Length: 357
Image (tube, rainbow, N blue to C red; front, side, top):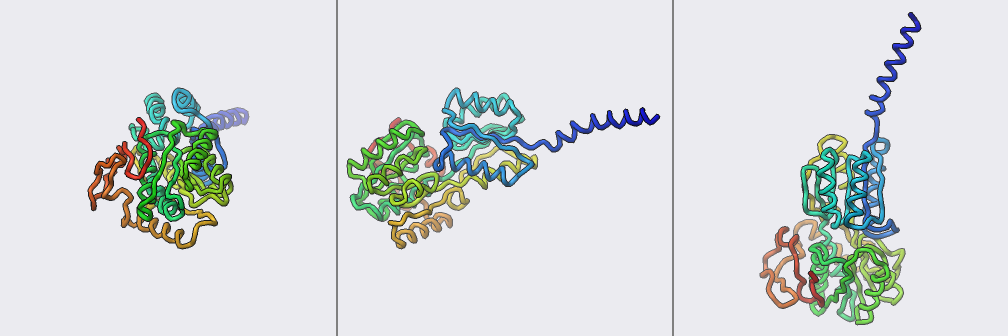
């Protein structure tokens, strides 16, 4: 009899143990990074977001990442592998990951995907982006106050609307305090190419730019400005470690709160597809980390305008706005709608360069 009871107990434990293990198994959350993970830059900010998730849900969530994944077929392979290995929430933060994410999502309807900077969604694909242009406008104010040559240089990745928004907002910010300011653009058609980023920065400084900005993934532009004794606006992260004397201000992106909320939604079973476009007001874009060469009056002015944007008192894309060919884009007193900003395909007056197609 006792042997039978022992056998029953053992059998029951064998049945219960897998069920218990299934209950306590952590949610697997994956991240795909378009460039190598470095101390600062686009990938670093998303890595900080991943760490925030790991810290907030210790024991309940297991995160992983794959770095330096090119946009295109490699991205699809990596995203598919994450989905196939039990990741139930996958963040894909790069514009070129949008189509691969959608393709994989069709084959894994029970997996939730977050296409960061993408604009196409699905039932299991949410989209999110930040209003980077708000930070760009504020950085432009600082650059407009600090330039002596009235020429800023801009090293740009690809001519997608997000990048055009940044160039235009930066230019409008500069010219709001310095109407003589001009911005000269060099296109790289690459997000991560430290050598070419540096070469472009050097070329712009050779052409008279004494303040630089960039929309690429590394600190190469900051390092070049530091080397030449010029000024530069950090993007994505605080980059004073690389350019302690050159940094004017940093436009930083904060993903931790969004990533935590979306992970919590999956854990709660309340996750839904949608679109988020947050900026200064939502804490997704911040300016700060002023360099030692920036007067307090300039710092105060920039921070005051940041408060105005958060309060809705200042909208960077408010008319009159003229494009680089002299055509009136927006009359005085009007502001661009979100749809118009998202479809931006031109450069504003004051920009030297073309919006390459």
